[in-house]
Image (cartoon, rainbow, N blue to C red; front, side, top):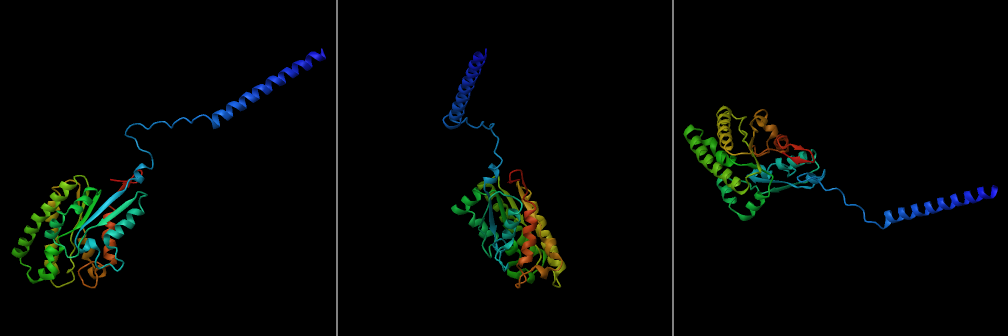
Length: 267
């Protein structure tokens, strides 16, 4: 009887060993020799979490010395402060191409938009930020020599025709990019003629906003209120261009209008 028990235990031990060896062989084969199953396919139209973050958001700067940043000791201008603010809001890659030219008028910008490289940059843009009109209106301060309604109205009417042409050019190149048009402030608001010059700038901004409203995804960014009080605190030594603090105000306001959501995708 004892002999049978010994044989029974020996057979069980042999079977257990065979099962252990078989299991070990299966584990080694599955872990080291079989190809892993491919990951499940994503549904059509869906995106990975990081896909939007890897997509670059391209901003193009157009216009005059304000977009160029003249007067800012740091050299950033409002576009530089805009970039700083946006990078603190999103992990998405942001690229800036600043094509603005100091002293540029609306006539100059319209001609610049005919250039092939300028068109290529705008075509690839997600957003266009621009300042134009200050040199048309103020003409290096010469507007102060003639504040008559007839002179101002004539200057404004001609500018609005050119601005309409500029918007059409940009839209023909890129129908989807958001255009941010920076309105004018009054650098002469501390002079004796401040009431007249402020009224001129307010009217100018009103009519340019009307022009911009004709085009989709075109946003006017007001700056008049930022400089109206204590204007000299925000102007460069030439009493015309913003200083660092003035540009920061513009950059902060503009950045608040570019909203990122989800994986860093800008609206």
